[in-house]
Amino acid sequence: MDRQRISSLAHADHPVAAPLSDDSVRALLERALAPGAGRLLDLGCGSGSWLVRAHAANPGLRADGVDHDAETIATATRAVAGAGLADRIVFHAQDATGFTSPHRYDLVLSIGADHAFGGLAPTLEAARGHLAPGGHVLLGTCFWEREPGPETLGFGFRAEDHDDLATTVDRVVDQGWTPLHGYVSTLREWDDYEWSWTGSLSRWALEHPGHPDSGQALRAANDHRDAWLHGYRGTLGFVTLLLCRTPPR
Image (cartoon, rainbow, N blue to C red; front, side, top):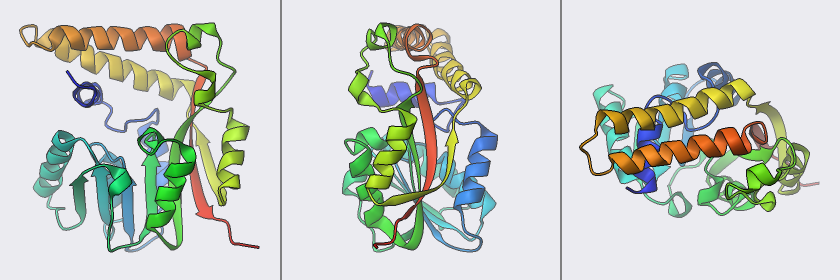
C-alpha cells in the first residue's frame, strides 16, 4: 500500500491536507484573493479543496491544480466536471516541480507541499516562477513550536527538519519576500486534523477487513497516532504566510 493511497484514505474527512479549520481556510482565502477574475495555481493541490473553495468565493477565478497522485487528480477532475466547473478549474497529474504553463498567476498556493520541492527556498523559487507581476503566494509550512526533545526525535524527526517560527519567517524574508499576513494553526486545529487523519484511515481498514491492505492501513493509522500523541503534539507547528515579492532597493 503506497503512501499516496494511505494519504488519500486518511484525508477523506479532512480534504484540506493541513491543520487548518474551514473558518481559517476561508479567512486566508479572503485575504489572499483579489476581487474579480484572476488566475490561481495550487502546487501540490491534492483533491483540489483549496481551488474549489477559492472559486466559490470568487466565481470569476480560473485555476490550475498540480499533484503527482494521478488517482486523486482523476477523482478531483470528475468532481469539478460534475459541478460544471471544468472550464474554470483544471487539474494536472504530474510532479509540481516540472509544471509549466503559458499563464502567470495572481495567487500561487503551496500548502504543506514544500517537501516535494526539497525545502522552503526551492518552494518559494518555484512559486516565483509562476507569479504574475504584483501577485501573491500563500505558503503553508511546518516549524518547531518548541525545541524537539527525545520523545519527538525518537519518531524519526530530526532537529534540522524545521526551524522555530522566527527563523522560518527570517528565511522567507531573506529569500526576497515580504509577509503580508500570517496564521499559526492552533492546537485544536492540529488535534482535529490528526484525529481525522488517523480515524478516517482506521475506519476504512475496519470496514474492509477482507481487503489485502486493511492490516497495513490500520498499522499506519496506529503508528501515526503514536507519533502524534507521544511525539510531536505541541512541538510541531504550522504557519500559513501570505507573501509578496520584496521590491529591489
